[in-house]
Length: 277
Image (cartoon, rainbow, N blue to C red):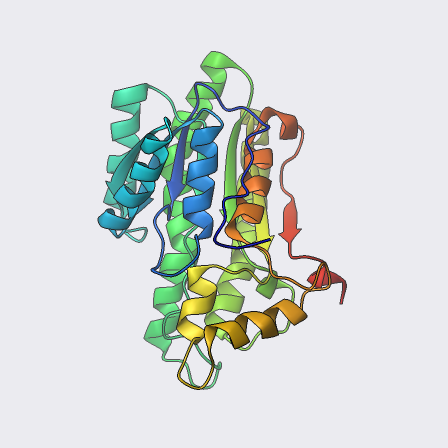
């Protein structure tokens, strides 16, 4: 499967629903990122998608891809660590659409991460603010509206938080490992406390993916893109090839759809079998 090719499907329908994809822009690179692919796929399935990203230009690029294909979307600049930004986004959606059905928390970074004995404590705090607190802030503002939407219209609402298989594997970066493990605990808590309100909360744990965030920062004069991709491909049991953002997006589409209406609190590995090692 070519990571530059759109392999996303839209078997599951989300017509009439309003979705937030936090981190729906992406880093620059040759492939598509998880957030962008998910935003595109949710829109293709019929949802109106609010693409939230700290880089407004990147969010606008995602929206342009959606609207060019006939979908409905809007771009919103959001700093995930800013409580007021989340409040403003939710207020805008309530004013324009009167509902929120889906929250997809995609943001996760590894900036200034490192060994536990070497990482700067302030860098660790920053990783926690972005990777964990950002998801909490998004949820705390969206959930009251999601509860009202379910109470009024029936059915369920859905939250998906993106963690990582790093939560279950040996991993050298203490900030990323710790925060992505914490995302699992946050998901379980949100799932338990919101089940009676008809809100499902699940986690996706991507493995090795051919995405800009995963690849671009590791390409150097000494390590070419082709060599890096080939080395990562060899580590994947299933097909000896990394996954792409469309694999994550297809898993997200299922979890956000009615076909997953009896699924909450799970941690879905999308890793080509690496968890079996």
